Image (cartoon, rainbow, N blue to C red):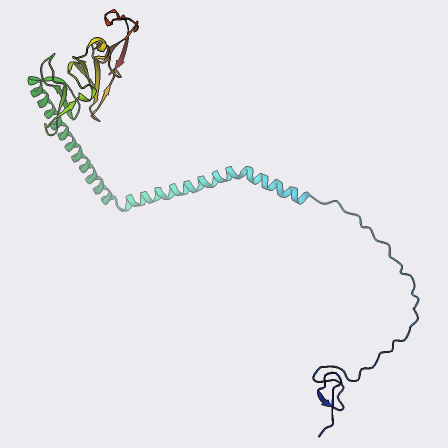
Length: 290
């Protein structure tokens, strides 16, 4: 059995000949290090080498300038280059399309002729059908106009409708009537929305798709005559009414060719008069196309 001893640092049991404790890691044979005084050694002063100054060479900008010029030249030439390339592509596509057409025509000439003949025949049949429909519609319109003229006051017609008034002159009904050239069905257009009193249609005219009526409000009193006449226009396409007088006028009448209407407006010149009989009036006239 080997001889052992205790570590003087940690007390752990170690071999007698051990130089380092296996438990705490301390060296057991530590000895003070004798530091001998040494005399300073004289050294020769350091000689600094002279700094070599290199001359800076001027930078060469020629390559950069060359690149810049090349870029500018490309930018300036870009539109022309693009146009040239685009023309080439377009011409190539056109040549290809034309070649394809020629090939198809040569390849399928009989089929092409057959299709064209069928298409021409279809168009001819459609044209004939349209002509027959127009003829039938024209005949229906003429028939309706003939029948309406015998019983009512004919105003005029569009491609699709015939317009008229019922009653006799001076006592027309306050409504506009029409018949469809397709079904001969009758429609009416009321003018009650413009006045809730008594109204009488005095005259009428038609220009293209507009039916125009001159209407008098017959129960106006006192100064009501200033707005007792209306000029009402019906758009035959939209069936919408419009008051051309914008609220009424003193009187209205059509020109001889019935393409224009003349409207007279009035206003009280002395509204401070004590009695309405003393009122004086100023009149102005306005003429518009219908």
